[in-house]
Amino acid sequence: MVTLNGNQLTLNEIKRVLFEGERVAASEESMKSVKNSHTAVKKIVSEEKVVYGINTGFGKFSDVRIDQGDVQDLQLNLIRSHACGVGESFPESVSRAMLLLRANALLKGFSGVRPVLIETLLELVNKNIHPVIPQQGSLGASGDLAPLSHLALVLLGEGEVFYKGERKPAIEVLEEEGISPLVLEAKEGLALINGTQAMTAMGVVAYLEAERLAYQSELIAAVTMEGLNGIIDAFDENVHQARGYKQQVDTARRVREYLSGSSLITRQGEIRVQDAYSIRCIPQVHGASWQALDYVKEKLEIEMNAATDNPLIFDNGESVISGGNFHGQPIALAMDFMKIAVAELANISERRIERLVNPQLSDLPPFLSPEPGLQSGAMIMQYVAASLVSENKTLAHPASVDSIPSSANQEDHVSMGTIGSRHAYQIIQNVNKVLAIELICALQAAEHRGPDKMADKTKKFYDEARKIVSSITKDRIFSKDIEACAFWLKNIDIEAI
Image 1 (tube, rainbow, N blue to C red):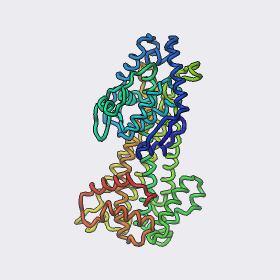
Image 2: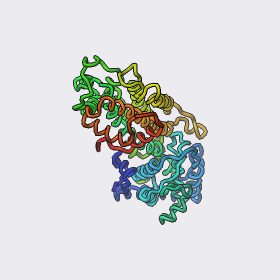
Image 3: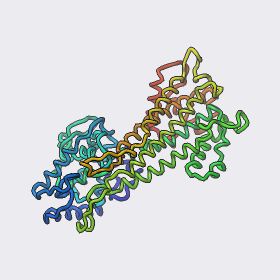
Image 4: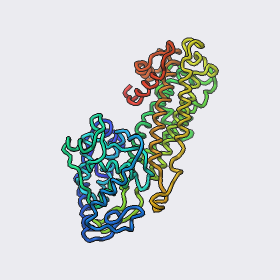
């Protein structure tokens, strides 16, 4: 059980909830803060104080006063009018993360909502009811308005959900599970949608995949080194300590550990004096990507526990402040950084693929073909990798460098963070396939050298991978091998091998 209090949710905990089915609950202490905050909102309404989002319109309509009797209609109209997202829906894991993160943010007690709203969000998580949320339509400020409105619709018994493998009307599933639709009270609609949970949820799911890929890329690169008789001297600890980047030192250490005992790697001068950069500079390049991923992880864990709606309620309602915590700039920049960092893992991987297949760059069979000329072997797999890394270069263009005004120029600078997070996820899917191609080629090269000469760790990896992708003994439809290998990589823990 993961207990939420709005302040301490970690990536490890969210991983367990998203992918291991762990249940969630709200802490009693945090619920007390929620109740106090809601009491403050009720007082504001009863005393007819003018406070943004409670009894005023939204955005450019912030100067429009709303009568006390229309407060509930105000919130309902807000959700319905803002639920105008378009495009493919987010993966269920992202929708699930959005529910979890929105509940966690509201548990900080600065938003003025009733406890039942948070309880319903968590009930959806625990019963695997995931809102259907279109991916496109958010500017990343004022928060993820359109995506979160589609999430909020489900609480009202409107919209659609994914449930038990089907896409169904929300009201049908709520009735089946005995969950009562809510009627939103003052500020609750705004509190649900004025936040960064779409970009953060997408960023969390993307990061968790990127982290796994980054580890896998090192082990795959180690197999490639064996296939190319790579020089281990460049991974000597003294070289990397001399520069001083921890992530670079760690990458070099892991590669040395993977290759410990291998008879296929060489020392400088045995075959050649130096390897090409795509081999020799693995610690520097992969290590730099790890630096970026560490930055992304730090920002995500802060945002996962952040109050990002507006206004925020302090001192039991004595202070209600309109601010801009909904602005997604911190996550927008982090997502753009992750895009570039992960794309680089594929860029250098594709260059290693080229070295494996190009007969001018190694003594391996041309294109790893069993019958060069008659059979093309891995020739077009390198084309596919080149295509994917080229596509990534377009996707890696920073989303955060763009802004466009909205709400009649009241909201005149936005983050585009959700676009950044979506593109990061697309890049990661491409990188997954590039690494799958490198692994297929590296396996073939290692087989040519002699698998019995491999290091213990890489040999175990080789044996497991060969259960997924068989040796290239003749040309076949390699698309199937790439997809199978990519799927396998998405679902394995290399520490368990």
